[in-house]
Image (cartoon, rainbow, N blue to C red; front, side, top):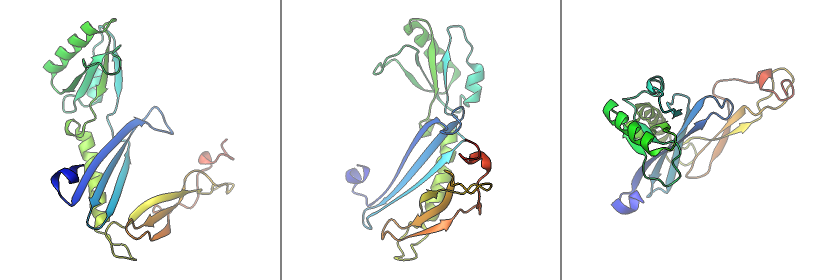
Length: 218
């Protein structure tokens, strides 16, 4: 849509999602996506990064509870937060976003407590990139990776964007040899001509720990 509106031929789009780690739910995990579009070449090059360095968090604040400890954990005030009444239903407009000062937060907390039937407040870390320096650093890292990828030509057609496309699971257990869910090989390829090659893991690992094996550790 941005390219359509501006008439430009090159585009860069950023998106992210956040939630509990699929293997360790108590940990938060962020996924950053960066997409480069070249309309003249017909290229769509996607680079992504999974990052444990995120301040993604929420808290239910009781009527007389001090949020200072939680605010420190999420990096307030350099990182903005969101406040809304705890019993707010979808579509309500009484949420307070982009809170990055003590005065603004205190005013928002008071308003939310008045609006909530029990005086509770739901707090969230603000995850918009322009209000979240931790996300900015993650986007920078994925941006560097994308720049390197665009500087790498396909060995078959020489189009830019050669890089990792997918992985093949099945790394064998180092004890019994059973295939695990861990990555056994990487699929590198070109988004222009479709040329692909399978490569070993870049860390050189050839066997999985028995703790990751469903046979040895069911």
